[in-house]
Length: 466
Image (cartoon, rainbow, N blue to C red; front, side, top):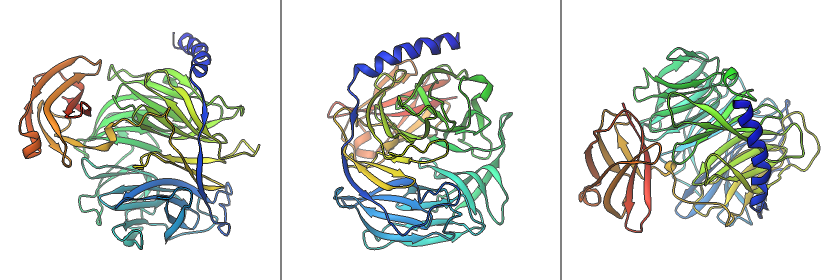
């Protein structure tokens, strides 16, 4: 049945990709440095891209073999480097750097070099300066990727090791004090699901979606980070076109998870998440590349759009208004050479700047700043953390806590994973106190709790009832 579904989907996809125009994005600006050396492995000067906004100024943060570059992109046609932080190790041995920000700090890691470090960078002084407040290899000498869950102040360090604590597929740190990480626990299995590495993760409200490289994929509840609970798993034998399970991102409603295998010639996957613990790859889609060895790298969901960085094929944006039938609507090729078969081209994409401008890092060519397009949805999504549900998961007794001043009607709606409303109530205290307490008498499962604003929009967060 899975094979038949895949064949049918390819037929539908051929029609679907032509039903909407596929527009080339407008290039606004570029930035690179001619004097930087490439890595010995892939001749890539650049790697990860991140973004940050402060006091009305937008920044691109891009890694290179030398360190971390802060680029002012407020005028996107004139990107200008304002600050540079040298890496503890630099030069041809560096391939990977990775970044996440939290509470005004940037967390920076590298995956190569015996003297690489975790750098925690206070960005309060931008645009004039930054302050490296932590620079140590005690806990993290190498980390392939990091992900921060702001709801619980947890940093997930993936394929990680330090001088004082050894290698592990994944380690979690408490960063409640953002300048002093505290190791909590390391993992090579969860609930009987074993893995030799966790390459990347998407974490939201203590629920982690873990891409386990050659070991497949799993989803786990980290409400107690020392004792996680396995929710669902999928080994490489459980889905077609399995390869190196690299990265992914959850749809804004939580219905599906988009997943990439970093293996030449493989498609992106749509993973059905509605009938937990049963999960299944239900659809396949790609960039329609002319390269038979096309390969996706990193992907991010914003609203009803999926942004993907492809080696060789640059940025690809898919409309996921129908989350199970992505349609390619926007693209920009940053790599125009014919050299394929290794790793060249777009490394990462960042779409969350307030302006809507899109940041792309190309391994060989540096930073690209692209204009948003009317075909891209920029609706509010789950990653804005406009309110927090705690505890989450819970037994049904929860507190809603606003993250900032929101102009709400007080209406509260709880929908199940199929969209059925199972609770509808009202709290007159949300705007005045910033909190509301609820006792939700509903069966165990995954739900979506929405707050209605006075403009008629709904702010939504996932809510898990145990």
